[in-house]
Length: 249
Ligand code: ADP
Image (cartoon, rainbow, N blue to C red; front, side, top):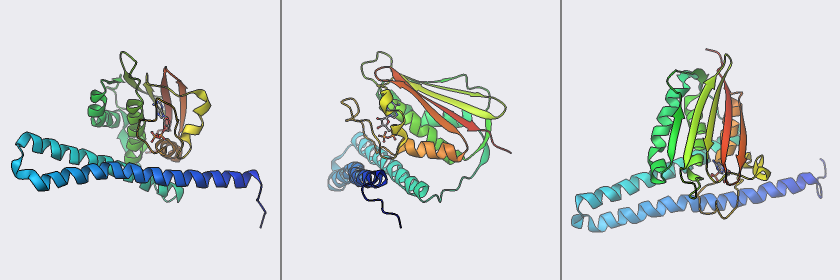
């Protein structure tokens, strides 16, 4: 047994431990928010459903549904995170069209983009780009990146935009997800892929998150033999470039 007391290794372990504790308290808080909403709205329904008109009823049910989706997404993140930690996640690859998948994902984020007046542009996506990949996992990768591009938008920009572009060569699929949002200072660029890491500024403190999204994204891409890089400047915007090997079929 090696004595690691007082070493850098111990410092690192201590830091990781602290981050895990912070993460646990944050995730509990994150889970509590949608749960409280679901509870409050259903309580009101139970108490006064007879007095409600159809319009209000629909609005209530909609909120409950949306908050459940949010809760589900948080739990999925948490579950994946622990699976990746335990290295027990197995990919289930199939041949799919990445452009088709992206269109589907963009559609599912339409509403949140619209509510912030953000235009999501998918350039030149008519031709199929086929790859042998795990559809569920790669959906999660792009959903995460597109959701981030939307949620870290810059309210000062006249035309908030997210641009998505796909290209290919013989071996690889290349996807770029570019936004003109708040951007990230270069000192954070490597750290944002670490577990639990969140940029803490006056622009980000109101945005909900757990800091594990990008670490899951990176792990899932690397499990496919691919890579992800970032280009970003504070106040300008962020671009994530992803390379995924097409794989064998
Ligand atoms: P979170 O749950 O906090 O969004 P992520 O792991 O997805 O966690 O991202 C880590 C951090 O990177 C975020 O807290 C945010 O500060 C920064 N970030 C990620 N994507 C973007 C983006 N498109 N624009 C600006 N900042 C971003």
